[in-house]
Image (tube, rainbow, N blue to C red):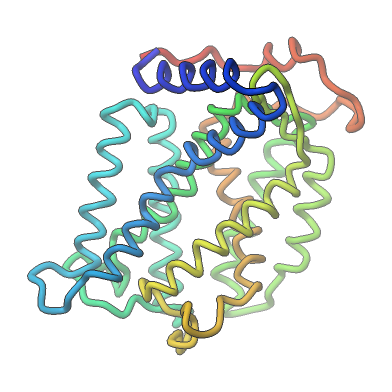
Length: 301
């Protein structure tokens, strides 16, 4: 167990020993969520700070500085053990899929990156891949921190097919019919019985997977507003999208909801042992020992 894991366990033991059980579990839930999203939080902090201080005459462009900052964060996370190499594999997949989508969407006029930058690819600053990677970082870390198991998980090939259709629809709707309504329905039908079991303190809790996706999409919508509010990217005529004017449309929250299923499938390409296939009744409470038999042996290092 590396230093970061020892620190996480020590903080958990300290919190449980100094607070009443229920208060301890709630605080631990909030702290774990914050710890899981620390990469994304630091990245958003970089957007806010650079928006406030950056001057056009400075020798390095803001987008290039953000790339250096994101790389420094990633190197720090890996070198300190805050992210395992298994999590790094997930993040790399997010980089690739996210950058491809960014290049396509920018060149289709969906949004734009208005600033200059040396490290831009077809109008897309390379740091943008880290914004998608921060979602992957959060999902990989939250699975580990909460010891999550996905019970009554649908057949894996169906989830991959759904993820592929959602991803492709982000491209093909520019040229043909938009099938997102059908995809919304499919996410609920396919994952209706899937429960996310997670550990807080000494207790196990569960949440339906579609509910977790909806709640996560709301927080990503907030992050979307930070991005447009700092004018890091702008939607069509996006001067109207800022904290001084109109907030980003709730339709973007729907887009994030769908994209989260692509993200989740991407994560499960690496995190397969946390998936427990269907067969248990959706109103039953699985035996914790049966959940543990599906767990992967904890990584040491």
